[in-house]
Amino acid sequence: MADTIAGYINRRYSDGRRPAMRDAHAKAHGCVRATFDVDTGLPKELRQGVFVPGKRYQAWIRFSNGGSEVDPDKTKDARGMAIKLTGVEGGKILSEEKDAKTQDFVMINHPFFFVDSPRQYLAMLKAFHKRIISDKTNVLNALGAAYHLGLHNARLALKINRTRIANPLYEQYWSMTPYRLGIGSGRKAIKFFAKPCSSDQPKPPGFFSRPDADYLQQAMAGTLSSGDACFNFYLQTFKDFESTPIEQSTVEWKEDVAPPVLVARITIPAQKFDSSGQMTFCENLSYTPWHALLEHKPLGAVNRARRVVYTAVSKARHGLNGAARSEPTGDERF
Ligand code: HEM
Image (cartoon, rainbow, N blue to C red; front, side, top):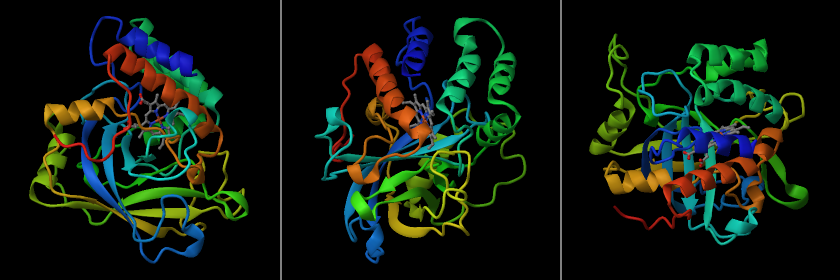
């Protein structure tokens, strides 16, 4: 899977176009500086890893569209929010990044994923990416991908990948897949999500009819020119294998079964984030669920595939761009 996706990057950018971008979530609306404040009243059993009551982390948060190309924002798509905490102490999972003091939380604006099996994902991806190697239209590629997914999973994929949003700072984002919390006998499985602290202004009719290609970045810039944005960060804990499964990423952990517990508040202070230096910094960041402390190990088949894929694909694009791969400290200023 890693070889296939890294191969797409090499082929897509063989014409010399640069920068070579992510194979998924290529378009960034921006990376913003943020603080991540762990709740002081955190229940004892959740005090694991980065969740130290009262602890504040400096973070970089990248908001993105889901596609492999930089399409206009009115194109229906999934939307991503990837949080990177900095200044994180503790034992890391990836040996080659054991000295990086970062912890990532990678999320999409939907509560569950559209496949359980990496094999199925790969078959779908090969069909969908045919346009890189032939001139077939997107519609045919999408049909081919749907065929490999089957009706149920194709429906889920459509639901997840066809959202149209007004402002990334007012969306809710979920981990989709589960993670471990803790090590040893007290460990549990969790999912997490970030929910905006307030709602956006209602949009006038026709809002989406002729928006600018980059209106999501402009909406973020507008919000952050006049004030802060904020998200609450919640954990849900495993109940049983039927209602909160680990291996089936397509099953939502419903809130009435696994009630969310508030664990942190994310503050994105008013700021300007669209200088070319900062956008390049954003491009060169690498997020992966596996940038994690041992206490936050990703779980389930989809996450196991992501362990290999994200690093390989990040290396491929950084190689093409002649850019160094490194983890930020949180002290970067532009
Ligand atoms: C087998 C399943 C998956 C594969 C193969 C896959 C693949 C990828 C790849 C190749 C990247 C770009 C990595 C880079 O170049 O640095 C990426 C980014 C991303 N993925 Fe996935 N992904 C999968 C599942 C998921 C799931 C379940 C989520 C749900 C949260 C997710 C959310 C994201 C987000 C938000 C980004 C952008 C991160 C950033 O801002 O840099 N992916 N994915």
